[in-house]
Image 1 (cartoon, rainbow, N blue to C red):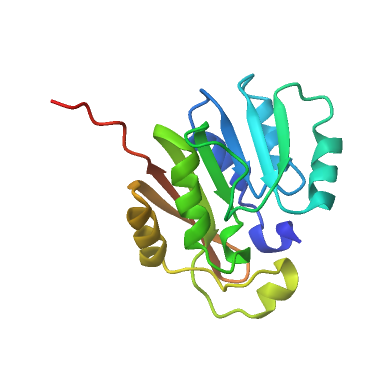
Image 2 (tube, helix red, strand yellow):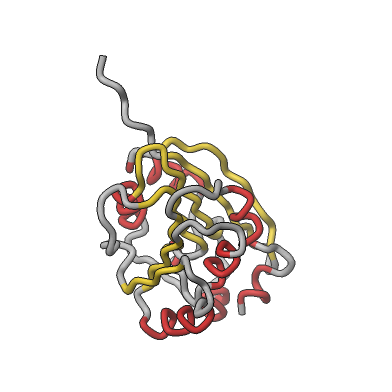
Length: 187
């Protein structure tokens, strides 16, 4: 299904290029663990995958069984099973359109990221192709760039980049990178 929509665009490779491999990295809405598997080839740092579906996490467990640095957790993205400032990099890859209140996971990412942490978010540009829901599911037909920029800014992030990738069905995927500001020194 993913190949039908994404075509030749390798989002895992795009995301891999955007992150720096230090500290703890989390794939939020990890599904079958495909991205964690790709990232585990690049780093020995801790990788945390979170998904709300026990079935998806079981598939991820099987895929990642030989990976020593991956941890999987059951949980909702609106209430992440993580401590405050637990991770250095958060990835929300093609998941936001499945969330009824998409601004909530963005605020949660801010909570769990360490100061100076990186957030990579990818999802569809707003479209009117209802049939895409039949292929990949979801509550939303993508998002306007400005809406996601507003959610990021409202949560406290500093937007760094927005890149657009054309995919099949005349759709576009936007990839946002944002930083949580470092702690300000008191003068």
